[in-house]
Amino acid sequence: MRVLFAFVLLLFVLPGHGQSVALKKPSRTLFSLKAVDSKTEAVISAQFSVTAIQARKVFTSPSTSSFNFVLTQTDTLDVLAMAPGYHEAEELMVVSCDTCHDYEYIIKLDRQQPTVSPERAKTSPTAKPDTVFRNLAVNQSFQLDDVYFEQSTYTLRPESYPQLDKLVKTLQTVPQLKILVVGHTDNVGDRRLNQALSENRASVIRAYLARHGIAESRLRVHGFGDTQPIAPNDSEANKQKNRRVEFVVLAM
Image 1 (spheres, one colour):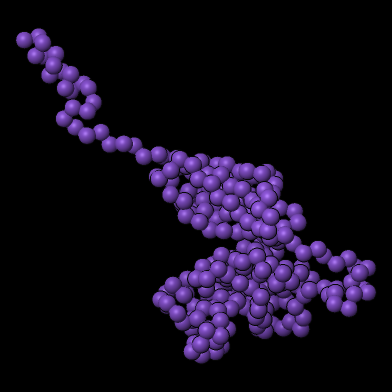
Image 2 (tube, rainbow, N blue to C red; image 1 turned 135 degrees about the horizontal axis):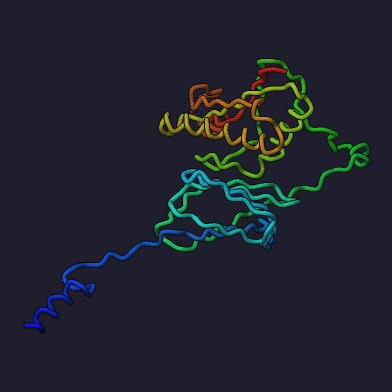
């Protein structure tokens, strides 16, 4: 009788008898960031700033060759990498924390072109002594012709930086200047998504200007989606004209 009782007791105490034990998924992700030269792929010592949007946390690092931090939930990350002599890079990504313990991401940085010294600028026929927008007037609109995003996203491409740096210089030169940054799209796809895309692209431009020392109180944003085309959406060339970013002078 005692043997039977002991056997029944073991059925309740020992795992794996009469029930299935669920395997616990990882509850944390060790996230590792590195920056490399886009041409040579050599590792660069860079500063990182990572905003975890769902968790409402910001992770920052001093200049380092590798930056590690821990996530405890699936999140959308806004990652910014900066290194001397390189254009900064900003990328948006979704990281699932319930599928793996470790996650590594490498950001490629583009080297900046050497600047022209003031002495050389005076003698070089092709050098431009300054890069500012001129003939500003209230309610006037200026198109940012050389601002580019990854297709169907609001990830800013590095070749946009020279044009945006020109806008930064303009805002620094005219301290009273306040602008409205406006995003537009073509008519391809869902109209609601186009509206959100245009708003997000304008917001990314504002963030770039703010990171370069321009007070956000001087910057407003708006998206028009596909509602204000400047050309018929009947060819790829015309659609490209409609996918644009502008700024409007509000005050100066």
